[in-house]
Image 1 (cartoon, rainbow, N blue to C red):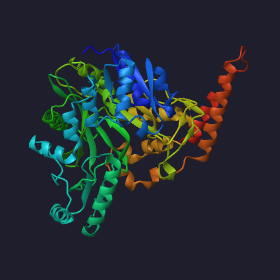
Image 2 (cartoon, helix red, strand yellow; image 1 turned 135 degrees about the vertical axis):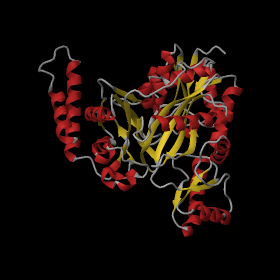
Image 3 (cartoon, rainbow, N blue to C red; image 1 turned 180 degrees about the horizontal axis):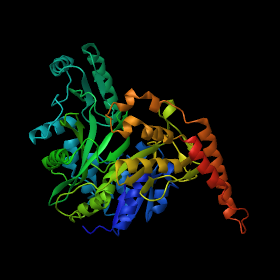
Image 4 (spheres, rainbow, N blue to C red; image 1 turned 60 degrees about the vertical axis):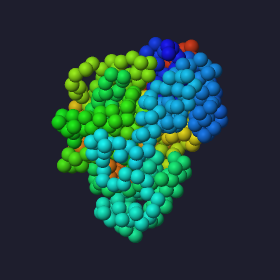
Length: 499
C-alpha cells in the first residue's frame, strides 16, 4: 500500500514526536484527541485532527473502534500506536491489519509472543537467550509455587504474566509471605491487565537494568547498543543514559547478539527493546521485550545518529532501514531526565493544575521533547510525564554538566515537578561514579524525600511573573526599559536556589 498519511493513536509528547517524524518523511500526520487534549500542542502540529471521545482514556484512546473510525474518516492508510495505550495490544495490531491499514510496529504475532511473559521466557530459553531462573508457566497452585520458591531460594519475585511497569510485582523474602504476595500480585495484575496470571522467578539482588535497542526490517535485524535504566522508583524509570558505564565493547556485543536472537525468535519487525538484568560479574538475564518505541529512545538516537521513529515508518512501508551495514559504536554520551508533574517530597504524588509559565531549556546538545506549553492544563486522566529532557556530550562528565545546565534553565510554574530531584541525583557522588543499580533509590531516601527549597519556589515564581510581564510589554507598540529583569531574576534563581 502507498502510505501518504499516518494516524497517530496517542497523545502528548510522543504524538508530537511521531508527527514531526512523519513530516520529516514527507508524510501527512493525523492526530486524535479527547476532550482534555482539544488544544494540545500535538493537535495543532498535525495536518488533521479527529475527536475520539471524553477525557478518560478508557472512553477515547483505548477504544479500538474509535481509532479505526478516525483513520477511515481522515483517510489515513497507516496507524502508529506510539507507546502506552494500545501500542502493545496484539488485538489492536490485528484490528488495524483487518481494516486494511498498515500497523507501524511489529507483527501481532510478535506482540502476542512477547506480551505473555511466561511464553516469552520459554521462547527465549529455546533461542539460547539467558533468562532469570524461575517458572516457565503461570502458577495457580500455592503449593506448587511454594515448592518452586524453596528450590530457587529466597528472595523470589512474583510477577504478572501479562504485564510490566512494576504492576503485579512483589518481592518475597520469606516463605511465610509468599501466599499473601501471590494473592495481592494476582489482584493487581487483574486490575491492570485484565489477567490475574502470575509466575515466580529468582530475585536478583542489586542488578543493573540494561536494555538493548533492536531494529529489524525484512532483510536484517541489528542492535543499536545499550541504555542504562537503573535509576528507578517502584520499577518506574526516572533517568536513562547511553551507553552504560558497566558495559564494555565485548559485553555490548554479547548482549546485542542475545537481543537480536530474541527478536529473530518471534519474527520481529520494527523498533523494539530487550530488557536485561546485568550482574556485577557480567552475567545478564532476559527480562522482557518491549514491542514498541520506548520513552527513552532519544538517548540511543543521539549516540548512534539514528532517527528510530523514521526507521519505524520506513520499515512499515516495506522500505529497508537506512542504518548502514557494519559495526556500530556509540559516539559520546546521552542522558535523559523524565520531567514529570509529580512531587518527590510527597511520595511522587501527581500534581495537577494549569502551567502558568514554561521556559524550556535550549542551547548546544540539548533536546526538549514535550507535549505541553504555557497555559496547558495538567489533569489526572493521563500519565504525569510532561517532557523528556535529553542532552548529549562528548563524555559522561560532559553530559552530566550539560544536563545540570539544562535543568537550571528549566522553569515550570503551576504544577510541582521532579526537577529538583534530578539536580540532587546528578550531583550525587555515587551517581557520578556510576555506582548504581535498580535498588539505588530505595537505599537513598535522601535523594527522594526532600522538598524543593522554599527559596527556589519563590524565585521561580518571581521569574515567571517577570517573564510574563516582559511578554506583555513586547506586545505593546513601544517598549521601555532594558528588558533584562526576568533574565536577571532567572539567572540569580538558578545560581542560588537550585544548588
